[in-house]
Image 1 (cartoon, rainbow over the protein chains, first blue to last red):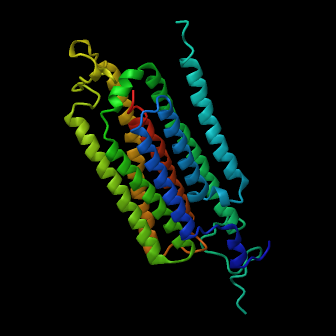
Image 2 (image 1 turned 135 degrees about the vertical axis):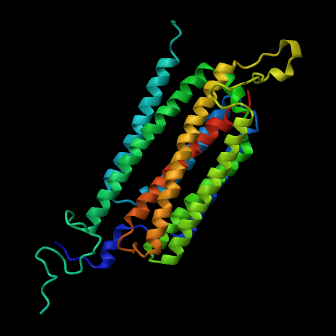
Image 3 (image 1 turned 60 degrees about the vertical axis):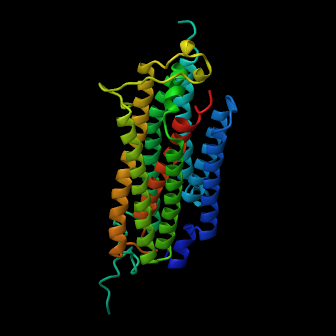
Length: 105
Length: 240
């Protein structure tokens, strides 16, 4: 067993700087402002697309930076995140593929 | 010589937080973190079921859902989104304070997170109260008499109203989704109360703050659920 000192133990930890955290926070607030503003403009079907695209960008920022996924050295974390998104996609896509193609009834 | 602490196979400076079935602190931390992420993956599926039900019924009752969605207050929804985003920042600053070993800063940011969580729940309670006043809560006293989207431009005699049964389905899903989200917030506030107490007692150090990190992951996840609930329930049906 290797004898680690406290400095080597902390190399795996990412301490987010206040500046970068505030930058992500401002980006999230800007995203919220953009979706709310876009909701008051009539874009037709693009209202939904814009709102969900901005929401996905915001969620990605939170996962990567606030939840430290970008800095983790543990590959299993990434596997769990990608699997969760994949299974959610299967749930939504296959359900909608069924319900939106029932014209024969 | 003092040899009593030097047990074979264990470093003499062993962290008291290291449990006996883990070899290193890093291994223990990674195991706890992986467990938390698997729990969150399960939460994605839990909320995913309700999101799926919402998509299916919105597709089926498209016009009625547009009418019902326009009954929500965008202003309150937007304020709550900002409150939750701010609370995610205070969580990040709390974890950072723990990593740097700043106990008072840690307690302060945890209490700030709890405060913002309570602000969110207060605004949500106000929105729910309005739904009760307008009889928009599904059940025996539900009543709904609103125009379908775009009908206000037509002469009064030709205007079509939303089907109340279909609007009731919208509000059922609204209460199921925001209610489950609010329950997660209540649990989060309780969790952070516990974390703040333990942080006050000095339980967390730069060598051991796994509960803070995992509590933070939970809080951010609940924030992400709201990041999707807000546009889906409040925003996308403003224009029809």
